[in-house]
Length: 245
Image 1: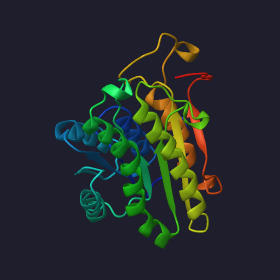
Image 2: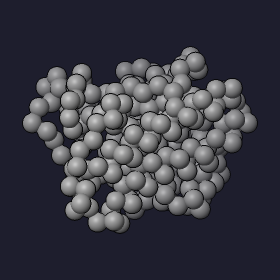
Image 3: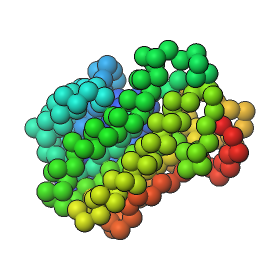
Image 4: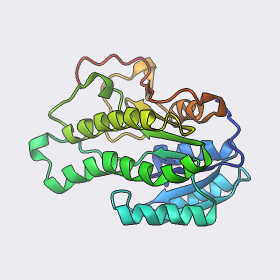
C-alpha cells in the first residue's frame, strides 16, 4: 500500500462512518492525516471509526450533516475547521444506490440518488475550495463508477449511472478551473466493492474490489508529488470490460 506523508494535513471523507468511506478514512489516518469522520445518521458507527483512527496517533473528530443541504455542508466544514483546521484532502464518497427499474423508482428516492452522488459532491467541493486556494494546496478525490467513462446505462438504477457520469464531468471541469491554484481534482471509480448492495455473477480476478484497492488509487492522488495529475479517473475494476451494465 502506498504511504504518502500526510502529516500536518487534515482530511474529510464524506460518509465515513461505514463501508468504503470508513476504510478510506482509516488509510488517510495511517498516512498521518488528521481526519474528520462524517456521518448523517450513524453516530455510533462514526465514533467507532474515530476510535480506530486515533490508534494511528492523529487528531480525530466526528461531524454530522446532510451533504445535499448547503447550510448543513457549511456547518460540516465549520465544525472540521474549528476542531482540526480546514480540510486539505476532501474525498466525496457519499452516494445512494437504487437498483430498481427507473419507472419503479419513487421520485423521492430518485432525488436522493442524484443529490447524494452529484449535488453533494458539488456542494462539498465548492465549500472546500476557498481555503485550499488560499493555502495553494488541496486534493479532491471523487468516487465515480467504472462504466461512467463509456456512458453505459441501464433501465435499472438509471439515476445512479446518470449521477456518476455527472461526477466525472464535474471532476474534469473542476480540475481545469483549479489548475493554477495548487489543487488537484481526480476520481476513483469502482465496479463492485466488497460492501455493494448487489453482486453480479462474475467477479473480475475472482474477487470484488476491497477498500484497500480504492485506497491505493486515492493515496496516489493525495501524494505531494502528484501535483501535476488532475482531471483523471482511475477505474478500480480488476480489468472489467463492460459492454452493458
